Amino acid sequence: MSFSQNGNQSVGESVARSARGAAIVSVFLFLCGCDGDLMDQFERFAIPRPAGERMVIPKDDYPTERVLTNQSGAQIKAKIWERTATHVVFDRVADNKRFSYPIALLSQADQDFLYGLPIPQSTGAKPVAARVKDRNDEIAKLNKEINRLYTQLEDPTIGYASPKGRGIRREIQRLESEVVKLRLQIDEIRNP
Image (cartoon, rainbow, N blue to C red; front, side, top):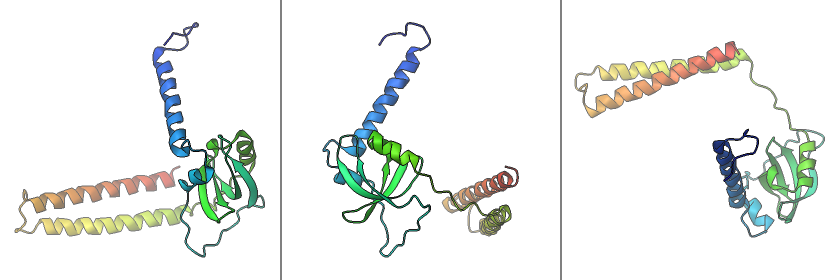
């Protein structure tokens, strides 16, 4: 390992970059394997789909058919339904099986094509009042359960230090922490 000439790069940065590179290569080799058979490689990314499921077409650009090629040159004919920032969702034309495959593992030409396709927009979040109401309802349920557990803990047959008493107190703590998380979510929704 050598130091950089201009002194801008420390040894730690160099080691971190090398480790990142090794991790990326390891993930690529794990996901793709080295057999060159793209059909087997795509099987790893198959999405189970219930029989009779209908696909909603999000944009005029979808679906589109294209022969996809991975970086080792293996090809597959696909009907592309959508893409995310990192993956493409398609059906293999041969058997109509659904896959979600990392765009980065495809050829540069396919990456350029896919990055040119739009990412479907979500239908939007529920209104603030509805999201707050859902969380308030959940808080009410949790508080009811906490009160039930406190009542159970007051039973004289359950000792404070008994295993059952400790279990009840742990469950109360867990439920109370969930209530706190929900209240924080409500604050974030109301004050983004």
